[in-house]
Image (cartoon, rainbow, N blue to C red):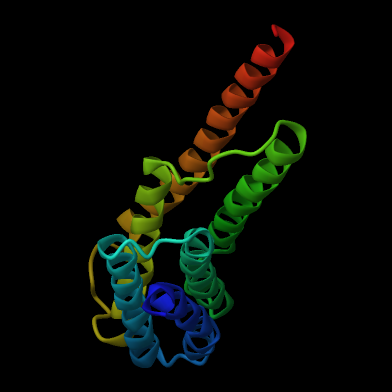
Length: 185
């Protein structure tokens, strides 16, 4: 029964998406930051439990990045709605995710199954996006003069764009190689 604990924690993290969105939208930044920190801590705990005790599952492998993505998108959307983030940034983040999902579906349908492990660049992009959200919430909640906002915005946007293009390149080359191998058999 305990082997399902990481998935349960991930499910609870998904349930935090709406409250975090609502709190940011209503300018309750301190509480939003606390819930975002709880979500981050739960991510670390479920990951530790899954790896340390061998409780990894296919469901957990899909739910965990989904929970992270939903929480990040909720934060970016709420921060855009209240005028903190520019719309182009939200469009870039959503566009990258749509590109990746559509590419994965196309690859699966046209080429076949694949390993959906995130690249190191994608992991770095997620870390920088999380740092950017936390910086924004810290700035809005307690430290209005917190430096580094512009740098994190530019870095997050650049990594988002580059990692999206990276996925297109890697999966295009992989598809081409797979098709070439099939045709030469």
